[in-house]
Length: 399
Ligand code: SAH
Figure 1: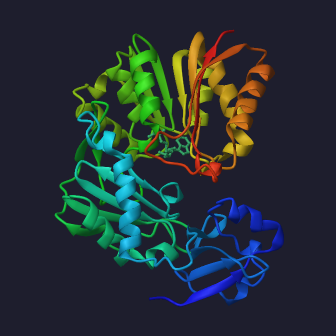
Figure 2 (figure 1 turned 90 degrees about the vertical axis):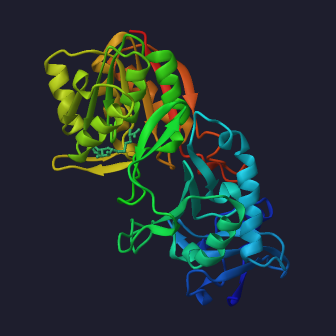
């Protein structure tokens, strides 16, 4: 189908690939120069011309492609993708049969054997996300494979690539089947979420926080005041309210967050008027809360890895300790901070160091009560732990 290019792995990296490392980097190859077009199949050999693995070229974040197979003769075709999707669907069998949850990840990139591709399920609709032009080159085979393996109402797609790896908004996101009527109402552990598959890069809820939201609702919300920062559509606020929170306060800079959050409250039978929704820079809100001596029982911190507002540039690596210190100051003694980050370059050990540093600098004591990484449906390879990007820590402020 496509021209295949043979590449030689630099000696010091051969072991990575024989051990099952899935990410292809051009720096790891002696003769990468011949590779020009994304979607090209590359065969990786060691310095003695022994075949190690095959994969495709696709520019994504730090990498230049993904290993797909260790079998030289394996064809990367509809049958190949069908087998991967079939296995992925079987792995989520329990979620398909869970009547209280109708939104989850069906296919998680390299964790399910094809880096650069994710497929999410939303109550009968499938959302395919392409993370590079390289994987998009296999679009027809992948869609045919998906259609052969699942029953679907409709299939939608998001392209998350252009020169800067940004979302491409040039086309209709609808692929085939029936068009959905949006918002689509999905369930997660019995909580309703309004989903839009046809309206920009973010659909309304981040599925990887399912267990965190459930823990907040079931064990941390009853009777509490909850501040949800970087609240987006207010998913944490809704879960807290359903868990019996005395009141939630959602803070997000985006104007749309107000109507989106009101919508999520309403479809769960909660009066949005009983809760505060504030459209404001979180850092500005912290200053206000400190000045007014407002204290919360629970503070949720779930910032984007990088963000730029008029007054601030925020990056998890540089600013999380400061963010934690602000949160600690407006958390009641005995209260809880739910600190989260999806920044892949920061591991749990380092994240816990940030937490320790923040409390030490303020002279306070804390206890860690729960930690979460990605849920089962966001499957991660043992040989690619970086794929487990989510870190969430429930921290009790002791003093
Ligand atoms: N916690 C959310 C997801 C956060 S997405 C959830 O669980 O669904 C990141 C959000 O941060 C976006 O909605 C964006 O508008 C918001 N944001 C980015 N910088 C901000 C800032 N300085 N102040 C307030 N909100 C900010």
